Length: 144
Image 1 (cartoon, helix red, strand yellow):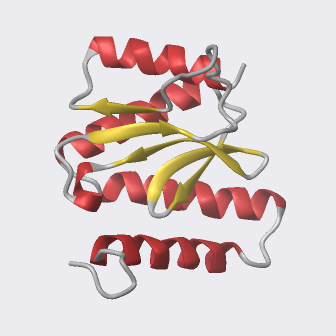
Image 2: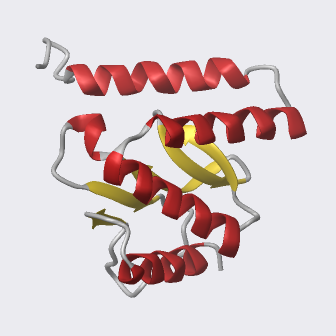
């Protein structure tokens, strides 16, 4: 349900989560900030259930394996991975906005450029071997 601001309840909640993420990291620097953000990401994954949890855990495993230079954090409450504080890739679970599929999305810092047009968001129904292989390839390209 939206109010007169045009935002749904879920969207307003996501904005509140983002503000809380920023407040939680305020004043932290270096290793302390990275540790706090990594714990928030782990907690966000642990709070997910079903295929959302499985896909988020798969993405976490892949990022850890092929892009350890990315720092885990949360982004509007989503499990996310950043380089120099800028989000590269994140998982938006189905439960967040009541969608029929979760998405793995890449921000503009990801190096997925392919001509004049390319995909930056991918619907994921479940963690299969094919999904794992495609995510591994995308994350590898994103941080190249």
